[in-house]
Image 1 (cartoon, rainbow, N blue to C red):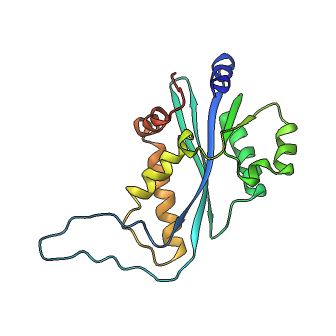
Image 2 (cartoon, rainbow, N blue to C red; image 1 turned 180 degrees about the vertical axis):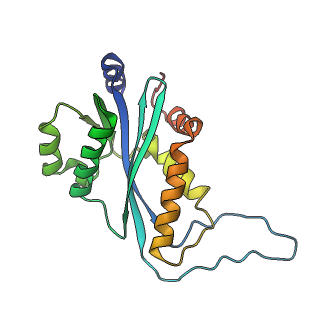
Length: 191
């Protein structure tokens, strides 16, 4: 994994980590505090399968950190959404960038490969199989699910979408937290 980092440094390019995740109506239940004798109650809708799928990137160039995301309420992430997000990123990053991502079928699809072949950037590299701990954005998903969205049930899809958007936007402003995700990854990510 040292080659993309070295190349990014030489080109002054963005090193971009991409991944997808989903947020469900039923939250992750974590331990909470309550006054003695008053058991906290967590009310939620049972047997409800609506979700918000999210595609996001954690970007690093020198000392700069950025977090971009796009929500897809009650939908899965397929090749079409991946290509659309890559087009958006190309516009936002405005310069060379190197993409590191997992081996999701949408990432390996022929349409995605054809799209990447028509552009000089991004240059894509796959992370090793079965190694989610190498991708720093996995720590962003863990943070969002274990902290701001834990114990937070939603009763309709618009509420879940709004909460997810609000918490992801809050994460965009927390550069120290984004730095911690990058430094926690076992990849050698020195500036």
